Length: 301
Ligand SMILES: NC(=O)c1ccc[n+]([C@@H]2O[C@H](COP(=O)([O-])OP(=O)(O)OC[C@H]3O[C@@H](n4cnc5c(N)ncnc54)[C@H](OP(=O)(O)O)[C@@H]3O)[C@@H](O)[C@H]2O)c1
Image 1 (cartoon, rainbow, N blue to C red):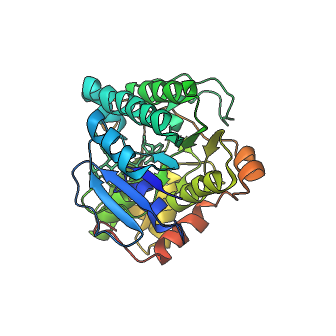
Image 2: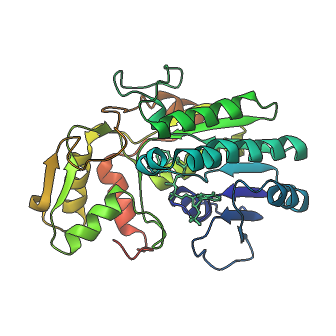
């Protein structure tokens, strides 16, 4: 089976490649960060998601059976600051990929976000009303609407806040950011009024591979087992990685003057991922221990 992963150098794209097992024939696209070397199983291609002719050529050459579309702007603050460009990438880029899936008969998996919810009615189930409170959430939801209109089999996967080893040249996630500060003995300030059930990125990748294998083309909210504040998550990370938890300082929204407001509690109900995909959500401790045991692939841990 030939698989195309957009955003193959990102946090989730990398985890998909690392967990792809004996699947071969993966092509992974990226924008500009240095990718790993090609292997017999995985080839990397630099190709902007907005490039219509480029993706038409790639689909014609590759004829993928399944496309996992992870590429895009993932930072709510970047999206808020660069609205036009972020919509072109997250919505226009998704439309470009969907059009090619239709033209060449590929199944489509769209990666959405917990950012589509307003954070006032957790825990969220798949059918709960989406009501984004920032621009990032708005354009992720617009991407869902593009995906839902297509006639090809498609799934919508909504990961909650993810953590794991990232590409050293790419944006860190909350855990790798905090570890890089703690390792230097610096204080790290994190919100104690923003709640999620944090998701170890490989657990999200496992759920996606299950969708591909069992052809469960549907909508899934994917998360870990426990609802904690970001402060609670980083306290546990400090302990598990052997740093001083006293360096982790609780702060409230507004402390960083961030451009995008975060929804205060987007934690998920995880019944569907368990029942339909058979994926057991991991506790924070289980996820962080798995991360610690993985060969550290990042310079920022
Ligand atoms: N991380 C989270 O906690 C989280 C939570 C909920 C949902 N999500 C969603 O999950 C998806 C993956 O997130 P992530 O954290 O893995 O993202 P990430 O680490 O920021 O990686 C983004 C990937 O997209 C590529 N990319 C960005 N702009 C592109 C463009 N114009 N053309 C082609 N490729 C482009 C990047 O390539 P380069 O490396 O070359 O820049 C990179 O491979 C995103 O759709 C995000 O909205 C993430």
